[in-house]
Length: 136
Image 1 (cartoon, rainbow, N blue to C red):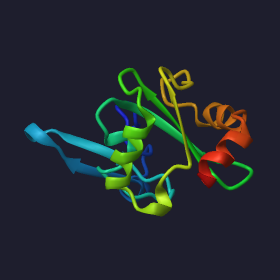
Image 2: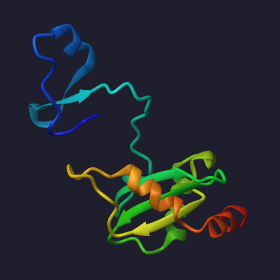
Image 3: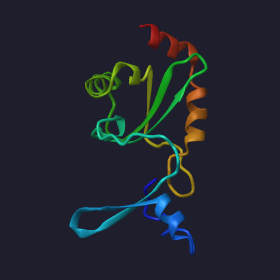
Image 4: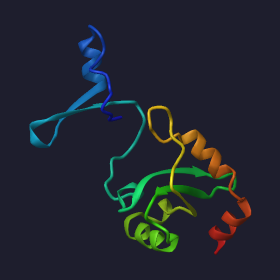
């Protein structure tokens, strides 16, 4: 996790702080701090959120096993062009089955994407139309 508001460490517990926090040199001689959440992730610069015009995104696997994605964007209007761009960047297994465009994803009080609310939105989408996209 990397945020501007991450804490500086554990009070009077330097060993725990060293194990949980990573300090990284940034541009201009600045440092940035990362907190190890324990989640298994991969840092990539070639995914959906790196595309021009994509502000944020949220994904959910539907009850029928389809990967559906909601993309927050103010400029992208063509889902087909977005799919072409993703096909150049992501392996076939990571390609979304359904893409929904929105101007604003639900946010938490700290302005992070509210993934639970986004997942609920995805679950509310018409499963028949998603199934047709998957089988197209």
